[in-house]
Image 1 (cartoon, rainbow, N blue to C red):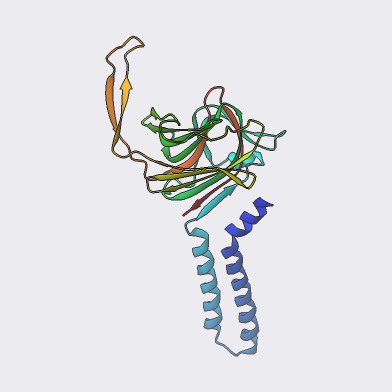
Image 2: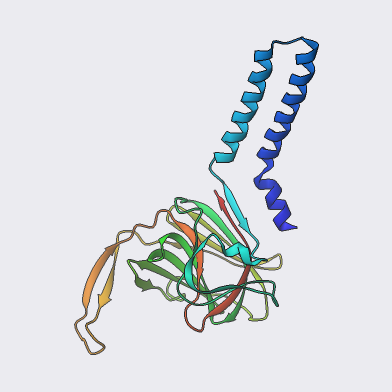
Length: 260
């Protein structure tokens, strides 16, 4: 039902424009043969209708809904690893994806709401935000006990523990349960809300650090004087996605991204 609802919502203006075009053709046909309006006016009504339809078709989309209930729902996602439909669970799962997968339709979006349902199978679910590409993005790693924010810049990672940024859960998430997550990105503030059914169980903000972060580069494991390499943080816009590396595994479905 959600697929049908968002299909109708997405194309509502197209349906309205089509009805207007059909009405214009009927009016044109009637008055043309009754000779009550000039032929040029009839053609003008049709042209206006076509212009309205073309404009609405090429306008900037304000939301995308991907239910992830069929295999083709992954066609517009970019990445490597296991990002596949599970016929048994009737949703998608992600694991063994070091790069992650990102959605190809909203790279230039800045402020938006990202909604999805998820179930952790093993360890966590990595949620990607503001992805410029697969080497530069924000990732919120949702585990059973809290959320660990990550920033990936030019392939290098900066990680914060959930206890250090006040993103720990009062009650651990259960591996058996589905949860709903709503993440709102507005400027450098990320609001994270998690629900079990209709009950809110988590509602916190995390602020994306500004300026630059320093990444340590070691020549080998015994290097006691690692090189600190500064990278500027420029994550003001970018698309959404998911990432689970190695044994990490999670399920997800009903993904909605909408401008705010």
